[in-house]
Length: 336
Image (cartoon, rainbow, N blue to C red; front, top):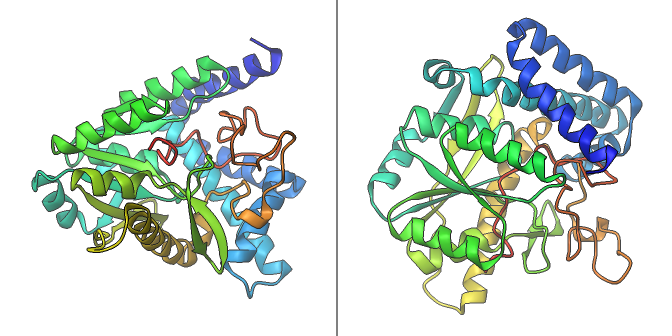
């Protein structure tokens, strides 16, 4: 393991072992201090966040964008502080920290026995939402995690999420997709963060007036298994609680080829994501390039985010540009 890998793994390990022991006011203040320091330094991550926010809020001037990026970095660090402390929270604490509009609709969908695919963007804290599902709803679910470097960091994230009651599959092509499909056919629940595709097989969508690529996995799984596809958006409210909304299911089109149906469904998911991000742009933790005309060609062909992109890019462990929050549950976009 390289020195950089050891340092990365050590920093994450220190976060989980130390931050969760701090009094909450101290942890909150520490997170804000780190966020403000990073924001003032205006590194590549902050600059990319502002560039992405400029697409989300096209009428915002430089001062407004700086305000949004500062709030975005604070939201991002809130995610990390909560995630480091989450393993120490009991079920009641998790319940009181999450308020979901459409909870009964989600319960009914799960009870239907059809299987449910939840698709989320990088908004607020999807790990906290997952813990709410396993504790408050009492339902386990399956997700997919990208392999990270160093391997010990990937193992930490898998252990962390499994400790919250999730089944975590490594992102390993068709094997992961097949397992997800079996879980759905058995009436299970899967959750996928699905606003950024890291493969070359994603679906091109119109997203805030420009072309981005999002994973085909959620739509394909719904088509192949008959599961309900439910987009969910999250945001931080004015108090200490995180809010969320379960949106109506995305229907499988009655006509068209599989490719056409997948494109239509993925665009529908993207539209829901855009509405949620547009309402709460400061809580969208997208610190990497997303739109196709922002991607840089790589040596040997392809583009950033395409074939050859580093598996650690979401954690910042192998990225030259920063993170898109944690190594989020992978999208499954290239598992079909």
